[in-house]
Amino acid sequence: MAIQHLLLIVLLASVLQATTSDTAYDLLEKNKFPRALLPQGVKSYVNHGGAIEVTLPASCDFNVTVAGGSHKIRFDSIVSGVIQPGSITQLGGVRIQFEWDFLAFHTVQRVGDKLRFTGSEHAATFDQSFPVSNFVQSPRN
Image (cartoon, rainbow, N blue to C red):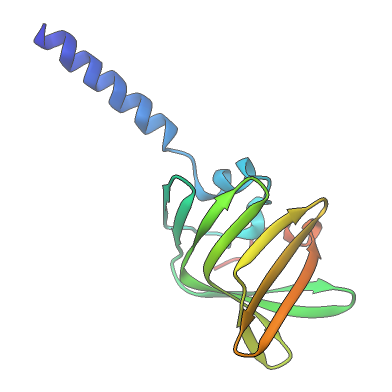
């Protein structure tokens, strides 16, 4: 009887390990986001029922272009949020540069073939959409 319980525990542990071996990039794809929304080199991530925390080796900047204008997106070394299909809310650790200031954005939504970033900081608010095609290749960290 004890051997059967031990085998059951080992089997359950292996099943749980298999279901948690997805990467942060896989989690993005499962929720209708491009893998390249995150920089390359994610060190680790934790997913508690959609509440995620991603750890990068260091902060990272990259540019996205829309309508001839370039915007810098800055990732801190720790990024967090709540992910569900087509939506990331309560986003922390990511900012976007408009003119000379970096503004925190709090929501990313998948709307057709675009990613819509919204947020506010100080007295400034923004709502900007970028083509998903701008996120084909993960930026290098």
